[in-house]
Amino acid sequence: MTANLPDTPEPIHEDRDRAGQGLDQRISEPSDRADIPAGAETEINEPARRAQHRTVETGHVVDDVAHDDSTRAGQLVENPTPSVSEPLEDVGKQVADSARSNRVPVAAIAAGSAAVLTWIILRRRRT
Image (cartoon, rainbow, N blue to C red; front, side, top):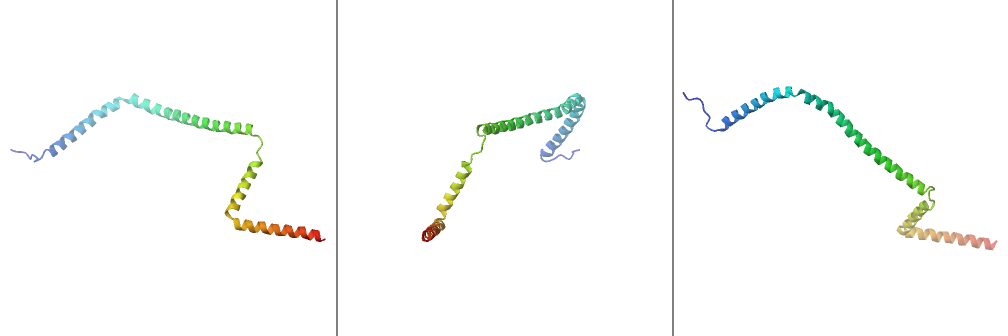
């Protein structure tokens, strides 16, 4: 009367593991049902925790915006009128950069302007 016994221990270990998992599940189901108040407390407190977290994040954003606004206001108080020389300095720098990169056209324009001014001056002297 020999039963069908496996040649290797792996099938025996698999059966043991399956039986252990089923037993663990049967034990945990009643204990989960018995812990209803703890589960209800978690479900009640979780939205409150999320709302508190969002409130803290919003507070940080508001602080950052207020700091930026106060910095801008401080700059306006220190320098109430915009400077006219700053845009003119920028234009001058652009013209100088353009003249450095395009020397031949600038020289041609300068020579042409000098010729026109000379012609105007000579014409006035003749009349």
